[in-house]
Each structure stands twice: as structure tokens, then as C-alpha cells.
Length: 264
Image (cartoon, rainbow, N blue to C red; front, side, top):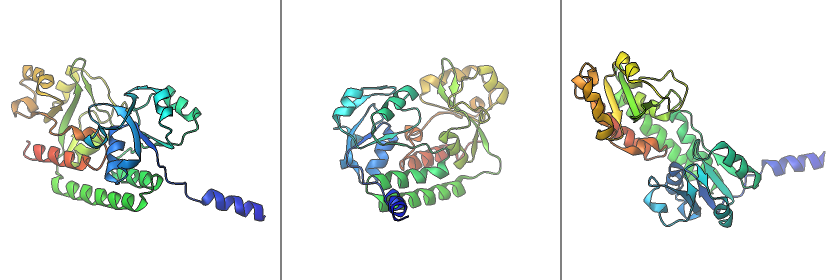
């Protein structure tokens, strides 16, 4: 009996704080910096969306293509992963290295605060994680209240134009649209980034069309019957931070809400 109690006590002990962390997503690198734990980062993925605060760190490959030898040389004691940042086969290979993995997968904006808590607990910043989570939830609630609408605006969010891709229902960006008093035109589709047809967009006649650049969006001017085109509401996304779920995402959401506040 004493041996069983001893085992249970050992299992209940908190994990030691990770001191050598590799982040495999820009958003997770940002969270580490927000927590004041940037000095524990020893490697990141190559990519232009990485925050400036990790530019000096060695890279362990690029999106979808890890370099395992370089990763192991950095001797991490924790690897942070976001959905889609590592293909399933490579994630399975990481698990065989017996290095602790922490997969951060908030399905909704309301759950993103939990990511600060989870990472904070693993890197010795539990108090900071709780504080950031509370700040995130408070600011998010304020944005919801400020920008809510009786009739939500219908928004087509264009990821790519040739072929035409949008966001499905299981996307934090769709939640961001709801914060701004809008709804995703294709929220019923289960895929993260479904391909759709121009005809489907025309049939649903969005109030607003959002995309990455004016060049990608210019083709919609060929369809003046669209409400978004008639009203001049075909816009670029004001802040690409909207695609990186971390504390800075709140600022990106606020910019989006301000952009859409006067839409009709």
C-alpha cells in the first residue's frame, strides 16, 4: 500500500520546467516571447512569419520538412507543435525520439487562452501564463461586445485565387470574423481550407470579400453584381497576424473589426 501511495505521489509531481525548447510554429514562438521565456528557445522553423525576437536562432527545417539531424543536435527537452506545422509522418518520427512534445490545438478563440497556461506550466512561467490567459479572455470579450451586430455580415475569406480556396468551419479565423459581427460564408464545410468555385461564391453573394493582396482580389471586379463589389467591400486583410494564434492576434482582430465596422 505504501509503495502504491509513493508511486501516485511521484506521478502527481509537476514536470520539471523545460530549458531547451524548439518551436515548430511562429505562433508558438510568439507565445514563448509573450511568456518571457524566449531565452529557453533553442530552435525554430524557417519562415518569414517568425517574430523578430527569434531571428538569431538556428532553424530546424521549413514548413512540412523537418531536418531531424539538426533538431537532435540542439538537444531539446520540449518541442512545441501546432496543427499542420508538422506532417503526421514526421510527427510520428519525433515521438520515437522520446522527446516530450506539446501539441497546441485550440479549436476556438475562447480556448486560445489555455495555450498560454499549458506552455507557461511547461517552461516555468505558470504565473505569466495565467496572467496572459486572463488578459486574452478579457480583451476578446470586450471586442465581441464592441463590434457585435444584429445581422452578421457574410464574409468570403479568400486564401488563394487560382484555384480558389477559402476557410472552412474549423478555423480560428472564422471565430475572428464572428468577433467582428460577421460570419464565414462557407462555415459549414469541415475542411480547414476547402476549394470552392466562383459560381458558389456568386450564389451566396457575400457582403465582404477578404484576401491576402489586391492582385489576388482584382478578378472579382469582373462580377459587378456581387454585393461586395458594388459596395467597394473587396479588401485585403489588414494584418496577417490574424493567421497566427497568439496574443498579438487580438490586435489583428481589432484591425479587422475596424475595417469592417462601416460595411453595409
